[in-house]
Length: 205
Image (tube, rainbow, N blue to C red; front, side, top):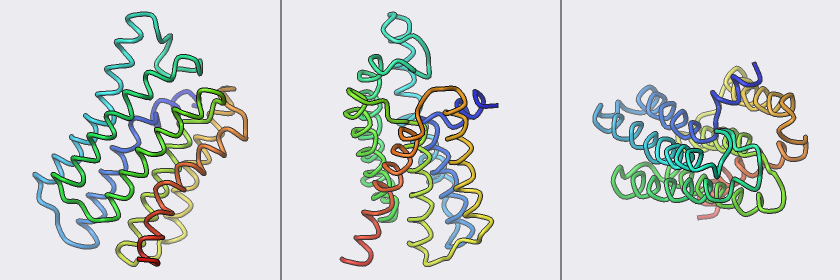
């Protein structure tokens, strides 16, 4: 179960989940989104933040520079992270310039890119959890969406968001992939970069 959660919520898959949830929620609560917009948003997110970095990791595995998909060895993570940052940067261009997404989504995309870059830097001397950074980013993105539409999430929704993060956290600890401090730091980094900047924008600007 721990391994399954690690694969299901692999950091490079989480942005696609978030974009799909946004498209569904926005169409449900605000106004229907055009099918073409949804297709470009979800497919583009998967390609730029998922498939592109994963292809780079696969090529590095073929060359013997990376031993496995999870990249458990911190020494092997720097180059894959740089490819991920590049993919996320192109994703920002897609979200902001091509899709003209709502401002909260632009903040989330930029924040997620910053989070990946920070993880890449921290990983040089400390193995912060990328899985929990992704889950924190997903939670922060969903909270930003609620702030954007002026809605208060139900207790069930809140428990689902934080419950998934808690499950992934326990999974990473169960696999001895991280220490408790590393997973907590990753989650806090993710939610801080994707939620706090938009809060400041809304209430201060």
